Image 1 (cartoon, rainbow, N blue to C red):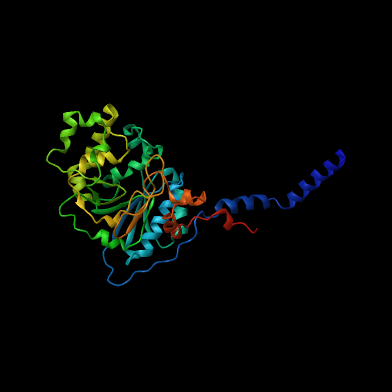
Image 2 (image 1 turned 90 degrees about the horizontal axis):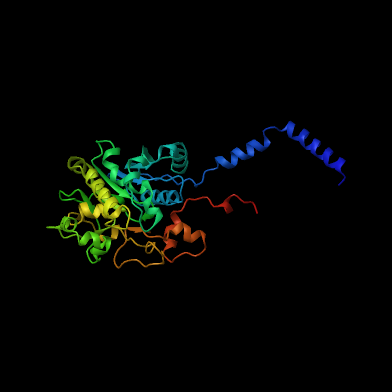
Length: 340
């Protein structure tokens, strides 16, 4: 095309656009305002619903873990006898509040929830590097501060990680008797407890004596029932912070936020049935290879470890059990927007 025709075409294009000044802007706004998640159905209470069940989770708008959190919430509501009596306490970074509020209200219009500001500076100076970068994110330590962030009127909480789904009535977990303990969780006493700490810890008498008069067992902190009142009364947040400071100086463990919980609570945990944390489905922290369920009944599936079901499903290389997570995935894939 001759140069003159190029000029004429450009002028005509500008004239056309001048008659539709909002056309391209509207298209851009529509695309950006499209919810990332499909709307979940409304879930209504069954019979004999009176007390409120309180659940705490973290929401990370800047990472794929938000997709896991949304799936986790859906799974709780879908299997709950009293979903309208379930209240979610979401811990998040304040700068993401607007986006998170839009996401939650558009995905779960009937959800009872509140967002709480977790300030990363609260814990960033206490975090030591671990075997996996995801374990070093400040929001991974937010569970330590639940008793400080939640209202004092909330005396009990179920904490749930972002990489799990619940396939049973959450009220059964809520109603367990802690028998005076601060924390309840499935314990795994067959695991080699010494592996969770370095030789420096075990060869240092001041450290190793921490478990004197206790029979410590491993427990996974992704599913915990916590008596917040007892936690507050006994200052457990400060006790956990103490061990993080020790770690900074002596390097006594390698696994993120888990070891401080073991140091403070192991050997003094109310045992919960193993079915409430079928953990390790994400494989180990380095390879994330496929794993099977543990023997026995299942009320909660937990993809702890490196391999996350949404990543493996998207890569078209899912593990067999990832198919159990897929029905709870409300994420809008690009194919849903395409007319082709």
